[in-house]
Image 1 (cartoon, rainbow, N blue to C red):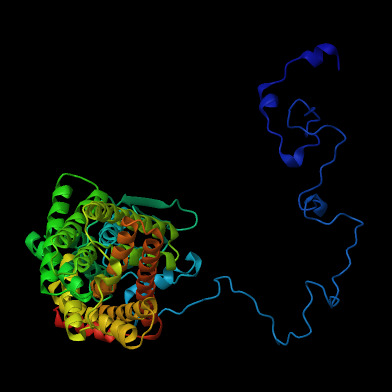
Image 2 (cartoon, rainbow, N blue to C red):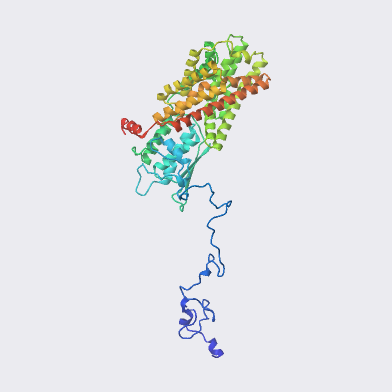
Length: 564
């Protein structure tokens, strides 16, 4: 072929012809195919399909390499050998679905079931059985997540523990068929994430809690809504759930402002009687607490933070006590100041903080305890300021003889503990149907404490812990019987056990430059507070572990009597 023929352009059919893989050697008309960039060069053979060498795989064993078979029995001492003491007749293995750690039953309240599933890995949780009606296309995921966040916000703002808030959010999601949900609760932020499957993108929503107000009536209504959502006989649609939630937000508190102020006075007066005060002390402590409550309301209306509200509220009781001492009145001024402190001690926040720490929510527990510390510092500043000026004016406040000199009066102290629990329940905005039970629970707590400390001569810390455990146990029993939260039955009942006198003596010692005795009393107050928190939590856990109250049969009967 001449050079001219080599330079002769090919036809369009030859240039555009596609060379199949099986025909890479040469074409039928003996025309060279090397003009295509996909053509195979001359001299390179390609194996036929189906006869490809297996050694082309990177996992294939190269030719000429022999591998010895594994030994039948590993020598003793090998990490892969079976110990001689192993006597199992057949091999054991972990199933793909995981080893079930717990067993779920429907005869327990929804709080226990949700709490149990939250403590399990996501892959080991049982599949949900949707109990609420929704469209055939499935639940509206964003709306379900938003509903769970709003319910969690009301619970967290009302003082509920982080684990119980997560259990409620998880119960709402599972009631609408969302099983792969992960709620997350911190002190000010709520978040929930849902992933339909392992290959789908997760949907995440969050909500911030900016305002907290203890309203146990609203808390009980939220628990009732979650209980209805979790029940397979009560069908609640998303629209109905939103409507009930809006009603809870619009409802006013069950007690007016003047009732709350009177309850503050009753609480302070009853606390002063518990530490040995008489009628005049009762009146003085009640007046000081009511003045402090009104000043705190005034500061709240002006937008001041709660730290300054506690500081201002602590000054009137201390001022009245110092004034009675300067007037040389035959009253126990220390009992007046102690009673005023009882109305300010953040008992519920302390119990919730310790409970969150015991259940593994360390961030939320740290935030709650830091909040308690700030409130306590505010109380310290208010009382210390008044006591300092009182000491400079010549007020003779003697801690050693302030609350002594009188024999214990069990009947009067039991009545005072009942009054204190009653006032505390009103301050927490509890339902009227729960006030009587929590009042009796507080009286039982004081009887247990008095029997152990006064009659049995047991240390006050141990006596307080046992009495708080009884409060937690009875509160959990009442909550399970009524399918409600345990907070309304425990928080007000621990009021008589709060360390008001130890706190006052610690502050008085610091004001009189007796730092050692003051710190000793404050340490005792902290120990008593921790004993209360741990006792309440332990009593609740014992009731959950060993007592089965609230079966499905009782729940169905209760719903039928209400007309559902």
